[in-house]
Length: 241
Image 1 (cartoon, rainbow, N blue to C red):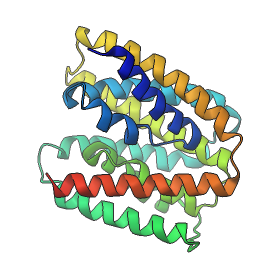
Image 2 (cartoon, helix red, strand yellow):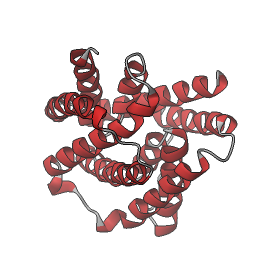
Image 3 (cartoon, helix red, strand yellow):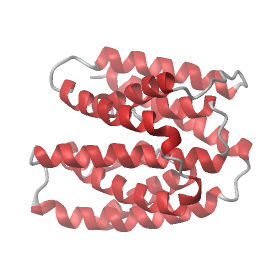
Image 4 (cartoon, rainbow, N blue to C red):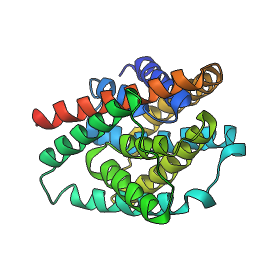
């Protein structure tokens, strides 16, 4: 097994995550599937995502506001568990295509300057958290819904990244517990986890440094572009399923 290539793949994905606060899976998962089965990638990446989110949350700790986003975090965890359960009970391809079309459309509107400003009420946080959590647990499409929700709140770059990091930290921890209960972790995964950790921490560090050099406008464009790409990948994947 090419452990060096595995490390480089997650390094690039983590660098992207360090810059924007999300998107590591967008790069890492399609490339890692060429080397590893998805049954190994999904649980091991949950450990990596947790470690990476912990590191980035520490780096952005001055901007973390858990109390302000408590409804988003709590319902995101609930949505993830619901999505994990429904994964084996319902047909998801049409739902995934519908979700993909929705996030692409909204991201495209944001790209061209059409904004949907809104207040971060408990009801809206709860709806967004459930949608993003469910998308994460069932469709592996958790990033776009919460990114679009936070974009509409008009957060600055640092607050945006900090909030996303804490949100995905909570979801990664939920996935680890869920996979642990399902006995999805094996001793053979240990070398893979070590390689992924090395690449993830290094990439997250570099991405965090690069992010400080970006303007607010460029940061926003990169984030929306990633949402559109994620939506397109999800739509094509569901169409070919």
